[in-house]
Image: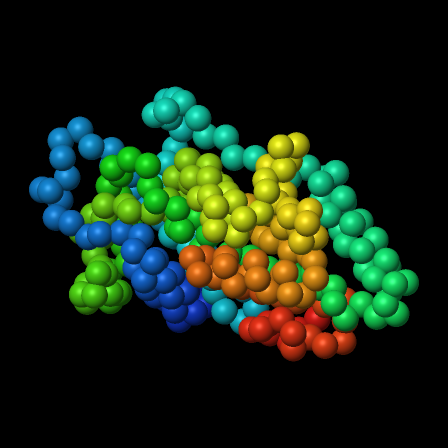
Length: 264
């Protein structure tokens, strides 16, 4: 990786970029995203894709993400890439219902202490989903010398050593679809919420009065504290959920693990 005259990489502080790269690679390795292989082990005719890093400032640090350069050259195998996104109407409806439920609770009980809305996101969301075909990728020069742990073994990464993907990495054209299917399976089968037939980004349980609204990897979960905690606990068993609580009550400590910060 080339450093500029002022210690910059793509206009960002070089030391912070390197920390971002190391954090990204170790996070992916920890989730079992890749397996390093020898070039001669790539089957003849197998699909091979190059990779690159994308960097951006996030507060005082640099967030780095490694992505596939899965450029459109032909129709995808299987012929389908669709992943739904929520409509603006669903977005408005979710928060309108939250406001209505809050007001009803205030009228009935004189307190909003049993209602909460949790905003959050899924860390490195796409890589929770398994890849759907054999894909081999060539990492960029920036990975050289970074040590990670793969399957319990220390590995020093190199651009000359390709990876076999195990998970749906960013930049792979099918990743949004694979992630959405993976999340839907968890929410409907494990958490036992019903998926809306009108907007598939919305999940709910009418009896327990809890709703989950999803936009790619961003979440809005609303309902009574007990039910919200139940849903979060089940999701956290298999997903990396990062929560930002927007409480409708003074007792913020009822939601475990939240970072004690206000509205996002």
